[in-house]
Image (tube, rainbow, N blue to C red; front, top):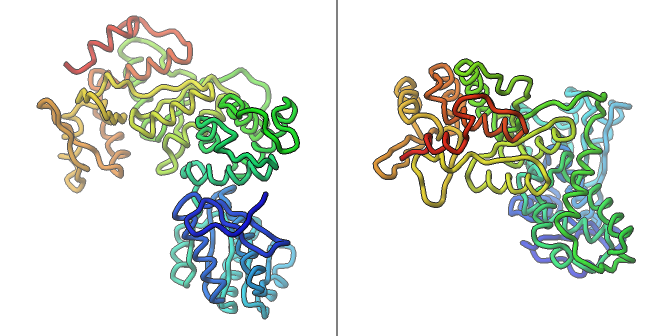
Length: 456
């Protein structure tokens, strides 16, 4: 890859290091560019303490490589430490060295005590230090910030699709050895697919993807000695994405396939389980019986992207279907799931209580009776709703995000079948989507039932 002169700040790739040690770093977001600027400033001034942290595969090691390359480029002596538990005392003594910069990577195998002492000694003895660590508790973050560490949490690749695409552009050039950029080699939808993954192990998974993709293109005669003879299609991308994901799943004993519903968040799970319980009591049915219902992630770890990742993983061992909000992120996630041949649906827009003609933003709380949300806020006087929406004389409170868990528990404790009938309808949609028979009653004719539920 011909790097040429270093791109100006703000570009999607920066290259650091002397000719014999060039490191390309993708920077598809302002936050990542800002982090690189901080590293450069620390090394130029030989002052500052920066700790990069984030999930496995978030790009911490690449950032550390870039920092070391910055030192090499400026002929700044750097001590590089990759500590483990084999010789803890020797490790702690080695911190006291003469190099202006200390670069280190803390392995997860280090005990919390050794890790704490190492960071204290680095802070005490070195004017400039740049390191990486995987997980930090909130208490550790507060302590380190108090002690003068500049903490930079690198984003989950799938929470920053634009940055993920920037990383993919670099990886494609490295793996394919082609002069064709991703923008010219891939159809647009395929580029979006690479950015969204899902990548179980972050950028490590993406690297494995490009290795497999290039091998497949070579075998098909589409890629030969760096020359690309055709476009990379969405189907090419999706096939390899699922192949990588399949290889990353833990080995399981051969069993019958289970049933699974994946939602964006944990409050969705509570509503669906309660709705199924009420329907089963009303009809004598067995909705969701033997079916796992789980969120893409707990709390703020949930969302559409996380749900696609969980849904894709579950699809190897379960008959699985995903449920997404009917808003812009939810529709995007559902579309991506469908492109991977995964079963998925959004909350039906016909159930929107305000019947908005466009710009619909439907979440599961919108399927609750309006007076139930009002009653919740009246009984929780210390809570204030985010706001309200009104159309055609219909007014609804909009729950504050941090109240949604409490609202779910309150609603489930107060609900009867009629209050949760819209949610029961969604449960039946999911059950039908899994190819399972629907119970006798309203579900016998889903279209007629939906018309009856639709606000007039």
